[in-house]
Length: 428
Image (tube, rainbow, N blue to C red):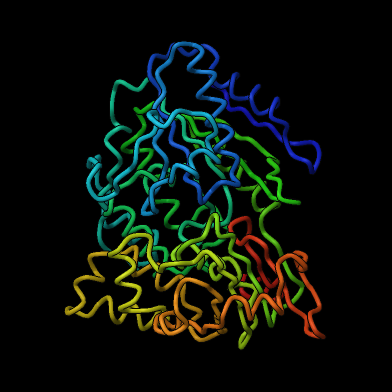
């Protein structure tokens, strides 16, 4: 099919009718019996992929097509009933499957070591096994729909497209290696950029191992204003061109430059989205390129109740902590730490979530003790105490003056990337 590109002509974003029209056009001429939709999970609720999934479900069901839905969980906690209802509306629960990244996958290929070494400047020299959820390879599916948001991302540079498959419904080998390769290569070399080493890995895997599968990518570029998700662009296609176009728009809409480094930044982590530091540390990833040396980052996490998204990752975070890139790599290469080497995505997460001593990170939470927060390498202050000074209800996005002090406020770190323009231009 010919790619579909739909751009909003106003800052209000595309209407539901415009989006539905593009989805209908993407199905024109297809004879379908069974379709698999692979949307992101609740952590990407602002992608508008939930609305898109609902529209596709109803359009296809009315045509007599059987529709299965496999949320792209990656290593995240399965979508709860309340989250499913909020994101996916009236789609019946029995149409949903839960992805198990450790067990429910099949191997489809191997990316050679020499390719990996070449794209990482020799920083990683082993091959990567490619695994995907077995349903991706099920020949009964006439079409696989992969909706999701393109936005700056700490592991790959710009999220979505093939990442939705190889990480979202991928296996432990690819999830672990891609995260660790990104961490070793350096997130600040990749965030906000397209052709990064990890993206090249996914591009290679699509071209060599999924070319015969009927996958249709449905990519959004969104922002949130006044609590409403605004879809600025919708890009639908079977190849990579739709991603290339979406990246350009996302770089325009989701990268925020400040004229200088920020000494103090306050980030609010909505409890409906962030219940773990595994997710909440997005407040660190997305702001680190803006933070001044010696600055302070405050994360307001009223819903944070654990560190990892599963018990093993939680245990590893508690054991090794967010101690900085060099310390984690030293621990990773220690033969005695087999548990960390067996969970490379956790090791990569610990690197990503570390400020490396360049600035401090203070968490304000309710459901984890201050001692536990400090035990993994962060500072801790009671949530209620922090909110008395930095009340999300009173702060506006960007610079604010609070008790004579200048702070920078971010209401949701998932929707952008913040960069100190002076540092960025100096390091190009």
